[in-house]
Image (cartoon, rainbow, N blue to C red; front, side, top):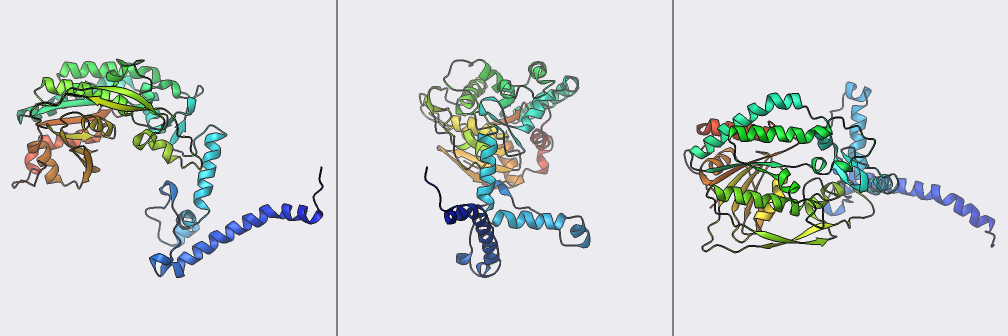
Length: 409
């Protein structure tokens, strides 16, 4: 075997610390540059992409107390660190080691289970900490309030539908690590059975996305939840959208019944990879299976789109995408968690709009022909956005403007 010359061996031994020192010096030079000459003009600034939304929103002011307890120094470090050239690759490589070598997530709010299935810990807590005694008390009360909401909507000549959406853990409990303690997970089905009984006893019109998936198990080549996403995929949402269409049309709506065919893609996008992208990995292994939907429907003549106002969470996005793909799609104005963001679905496009209380009241109380309230199994019963919708129907005169606000056509 060839023998390295002493000078070459010395050079190789010095290479790692020299490279490390060079990277540190480069990062320091970048921070100094941006704080001096780079601050004079945008084109002089050395921009660095900041992953994970790492900058603090409200750093504490410098004071003797914040300096002595370390809060000010920590805020400065969190502000400067993500702006350095070293931060992004170090975060990505750290997360890659956790993901590829240790089979773990590098983000504290995300877990990784069997088969590299990703999930959010918030849903795990909801699934594993079911309280049937609390459900027995709260369930009848919330079902009665939903019935009162339904009556108030129908008194205005509108249709109402309450939509239950599933969670990934509820649909795929087997993805949890074998050693993870989940004392009450087996009681989740009983909680839903109790909830359905309360809704039926109260006479609430509801669509059950959990049952939509259960009735279709084993019929399709892909799961209903993507490996790298927290929300159901377009297949799961389309199954629920079929049930929503059937139930609303039974009330007199003008939605187009539809069927679909399913192909398989290995190029996930959008919400099919929402928590996978949050991991900020250096290398990509996002070739897991997702559905590719082909919709079949006969357009009615004439096509008169149903006007729908929705209040709910992120699981409605895929449902609306399915409804927006049918032969005569409805016009949907979605109020995401009541006041987080507004979305308009019309003519095959989704656009955002600014939420104002008068506009929201007019959309729900006047413009809409159908009102939908969605709740995920993780929040049932008693969601905050559900309470907000009920408050509007209880006191419509407090918000509804005397002069109409250019409502959607």
